[in-house]
Length: 344
Image (cartoon, rainbow, N blue to C red; front, side, top):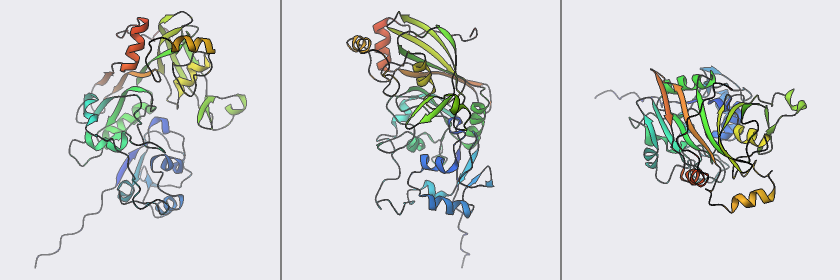
């Protein structure tokens, strides 16, 4: 009789903390990524050392740092993990209805990295009320059908443009380190209601979360741990005086809604921003609404320049969305403009 083969241990899952997740508590990170997991279940996994951060035992109050590696037990990632408070047949994942659609969005790819041109309206990660998200479909980009690609940064659901995916843990670690060290250039294009003044400059305005939105931190908030530094370089590339501007932006930090809040802070919110755009006069908005402009938030991650995990530099540019192309044509803005921030 042949000896029985030893049962192989289930493979653990490694998740990398992205730059815009830096500073959040571990329990809140789990609430964001795995809302079906209850607090008692999380505490049990921490007590039994099933969850580790950079190989160490931790507690739920740990504040995470960008680039840290979270080791998760396999049942957390699998479809068998069901909260006792959830319906037995409740879906744990919300993949795209057509996961192969991701392949049509590829701007650049190699054995370590994939760069996508994310369309506006597609959520990067899951959440309440979302029917699908990109993160749950990343296996469509796996080269071997086993290794799950990983997000290394995020874009707002309504923001289009360059989104970088790591195909393995090594690439995820290296890319996250580059974002953390700010050795990247992220250039965004936006259309603003009105023209920012001055036409080029630096916005250094810390942010704090209030309810579901971000806001500029006041003096009292600056002394709290919740206020986060936020710095943006910007340049007006082209404009229609007092009407609309084509603005290029270079965020030096990666806070939630940073560009949207900073432009609103200047009194020139991004066109059709549902959260931060309702500060212009009714007549101004009515005049723009009557024009043949594109719909939706006009914020686009135009270009990303970042060191490659193994060699050289990745430099990827995403074409404008159809909606933003429509607005650009209406005002005669250039879709091939080159932007220089060296003199800011």
